[in-house]
Length: 177
Length: 177
Image (cartoon, rainbow over all chains, first blue to last red; front, side):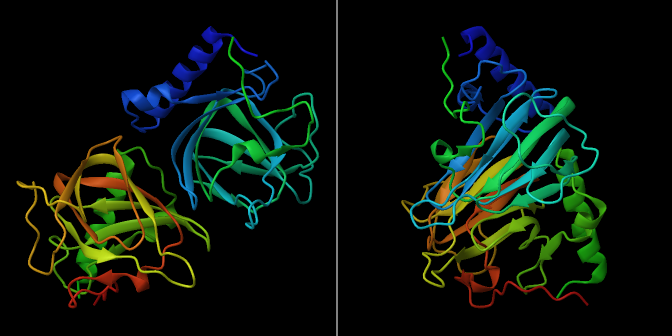
C-alpha cells in the first residue's frame, strides 16, 4: 500500500521524465499514468510507472518509467488463450536500465536485486537507442541506473494480471490509501 | 526511381526530424532508415521515410517521418496467412499529420491529395500526443502539415509487400539509381 501523496509524486515524476525525453502526453493521458508498487509498499525501491498507449487483442505499446535505482521484480509472461504468451521489446529512450534475463549469469553484474526472489542474472545494459526482445515465458527483471530511465515497450497483447512473479509476495495490483 | 543524392537527403531529413523529436537512433540504425517513393519518382510529393524498430511474426513498431506536405498514398492491409491483416495505431510525435480513412467524408478537408486514386476522405487531425487506430482492411492515406511530421506506428506484423494501393501505378518498392 502506498499513500495518495506518494502515488501523485510518482505520477509527476513519470510525467516529467517523459516530457524530458520529448514524449508528449495529453492532459487526460497524464492522469492515466499508472503507478505499480507490486503490493510491497516500497515504491522507490520496487516499483514501476507506466503509460499504456494502446492494448488491443493483438498488440500493445507502453512507456515504462523507472525512478533512480528502482527495480521491476522478476516475472514471466505465461501462455494464455492459445497464445505463447506476451513477447516484448524494450527500447531505452533516456537514462539507463539493466535488464536481467535467463542465460549465463553475468559475473560482475551492475545491479544488486532488492530483497525477494531473483533467479536470473544474464545482464543486458540498455542505453538510449538500444533495445532487446524478450521471448514469451522467459523470466526477467530490470533496474534503472542512478538517473532513472524511460523505456518504450512494444509487445503482443498485455495481460498484466496473468504475470507470474518469482516472489510469491509480489502482486501486480497497487492499493492507494 | 530517385537519385542516390535524393535518397541520402531524405535519410538525413528523417534523421534530423527524429533527433529533434528526442528519438535516439544508433549510427547503424541511421543507415537503416528506409526511403519509399512508391515507384513514382516524386518523393517530395508522394513518399515516406521510415525506421523499423522491430517486426516479429506477432507485432511491429516503426517511426514514420514525413516531409512538409508529403503524402503516403491510399492503401489497405489485406488479410494474410489466416490473420485479419495488419491493424495499426498512429501516434503523432511532432509536427502535424492529416489521416484520411473510410467513413463520412469531411466537408472541407485540410488536404488535397496529389494526382492518383484517392477514395476515402474522413479526416483525422493528429498533433503531438494524439493517436488513431486503423482496423485491418480499412483504406487510408495521410499527408503531413507544412512542417512535416514524426509519427510512431504500433501494429501487428508488417508485411509491406502485401499492401494494396488504390492507384495501380503505386508500388511499395523504391529503386535508387
